[in-house]
Image (cartoon, rainbow, N blue to C red; front, side, top):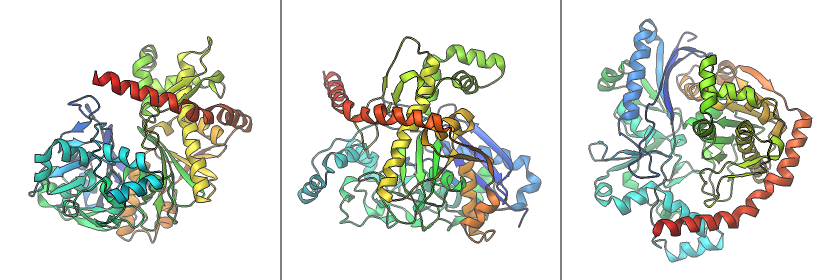
Length: 519
């Protein structure tokens, strides 16, 4: 089956891709679209999208790709998709959307109404989860819907994540992989199944069982492409759609990370560091490890919520002149900025940045911080400080996960848009003191998703076999020991101390903002 192909869709926050993937991990062809409007906001902080936006984008990409490769269509043996996490829809009994999609970026908040049972509230407090579970309750979209759109919730027959709906649009089956169940939903991550009615944390996201979809292991055939979806997408009817996993999980697999001594660093809109282990452990206190695409593995993860979005933020706010110069030179603004920061010393002359432009679940009061400004600092120091700040926070995450798991990571594998930059990869290697490896493509999520399909169709015997055939090491960035020692001095004597020192100040700021908004 050396000439066989898998049609893979990778649906991201900012863009989408359709790819024809070969068993050697190369692409026969691909079609990509950057969204003109990734989301819209009816109110400040909201992030929504039209219900069929992503499917219509998939259909357009598929039609264009398959029309251009008409002679190759009969080589396609399966279809698969991977997409963004924690993005939800409400469907009625006829499987029609009742409202717009709520994206993972959305910042609306439900009101905590003291609705947890007394015995559970007492237990949450006893184990130190009292405030954490309240925060999770508030950011759970289902709770907001129950409180603010009760008519919509009453009509909701199924409450699903985005990949579940896309599976339905392609096959007519409302089924999804356990490796896609990553969000604020009543899911038991360790057991890979919906929580039972008496589960301790079920009250945090108490979506009734009848509103949830059927779950299957990764690698299962979800169903066949229907004649109706074939007409819309150009995909031959009858082809099997194979269950995979989330975009980050597929990326980790596609980067060849399946051993506990490896970690995948994803420099995307959200920056993450994921491990791959067979023994379940919480990467941070009260935070689950996610089901990996391989059904016997988990992906403990540490997340910087805004991640490399911050570089786009910098360009929008401070990079107008650099953007114009880059256009004149025929290069991207990021390439120009890479050249500007290359010779800035590690530590940016004492400029340190905490990348909490948006706080996470475990640090809900955290604010972005920049300290150490001096008269010699330029906007290029700030740009590099953003990269270093993200890496320092991910390094903190790696230390935490190693301590909690007893595992030692000895190599990093870089993916995501930021990994295209050699200077980003070198900063990462220097700061972590570990080699950073890149593979033959930046489309690692598509490679990982396609692995699941090729394995399901019998092309490979297991994931190690798939990786051996589909992943080629492109280059390795090795740490400079002098730079590593310098970074560790800044980390240990400055960065690692910031959170504790700033926590009361951040909390005061949050309270002051709440008061001013209520006046």
